Image (cartoon, rainbow, N blue to C red; front, top):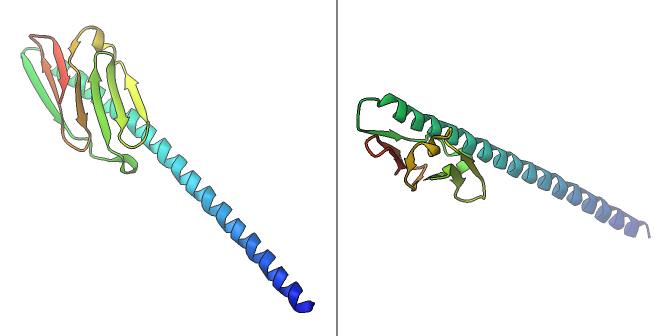
Length: 141
């Protein structure tokens, strides 16, 4: 009888230890995913601000010229996730490829005074911003 008690005690301690191990593993996995999601959201917002600033720069810098081009490269891939840059009539939209994270802005209301042509560009390539002053047209390639 004494041997059976030791075996049952060993099994109980093993199951409790295994359950604690699984709970800690799940906790760290969920917190890692939560941090990653927060980093991706913040990076999408930051990339949107960066491209909006580049669009304002291209419009403000070229007062006397008819056509201006800026090529930007977003250096980082936050949490290993590249972004898709979409320029639409409603504004600038930054979205991720693998998760449903996106951030939209109205480009400081430039979409009301400019003709914006729809364009897409992934962040892992250089993003080309062009402004045609004669047609008052802004596009992303």
